[in-house]
Length: 357
Image (cartoon, rainbow, N blue to C red; front, side, top):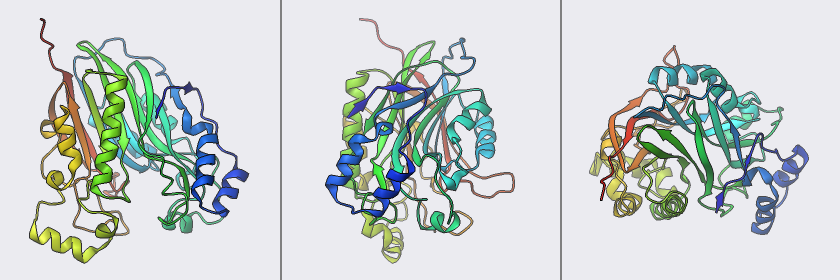
């Protein structure tokens, strides 16, 4: 499912309809009807940079970050500025959610960086969020209830698209502790460099599933990229949720500890446990030069979650690009406090020279 409709502002689902769905039955037919009717799930919000860069760079410094709601916009702006990012790929950002101050977090971040942005909706949130967020925001209301992925940049971009990786409705009935309409997705856009265009992809794979399903999502994404930009140099930045376990296994803390005792590198070098890597490699994608090997990308919050052992679940995957200077950057504020449960990833990329026949 490839969406290419672009709007200046996404149309939020009204609060009455969100409440009706939140308090109603969780059957698949009702989810399918809501998914089809919510216009915000079938469009991309776009704002151009106020002063687009005209000096096209040869290389791009790209940052990927699962910003966990992007509640700390000011800290995020400072972190990204220090990282020297030309392009920022984001997941788990809010628009009009009480838990993040009912702000348009992406627009605020882009404005502070003098940048433009794309925003695509992963989920329309029917309540205030997860159990912790519902307790913290009790009595408040969501203005828009939108949650998704974004791309923020000062460079001109072209041919934005949204790929829906699944429409299972698994989050609709509340069994995972939240009620939502939508599905995992990826946001795509072409960015110009002096060596030619590069396709940039920001994605977020399902956490509440198993390795085989994550491989299926990878297949959907790679098929969509091949249709949208066949052969173009491309970089995927994503929270691929490569825990190496299914949901039940991930929740079995003792089992995870025992597995790590048997294989100490399992969580930080998950490639042999997650078939999505083999699939990507067979289709011409690589990750060795784009990532710091053996380093966890999860971060423990002030409340002690997620608890160690932590894993490497955020990745860059590249095609047709030279990758250099990968880094994992701490997602902390000036006091050293976590502002997300994910670290930032950074890498420098440039298109590989193309041979002339």
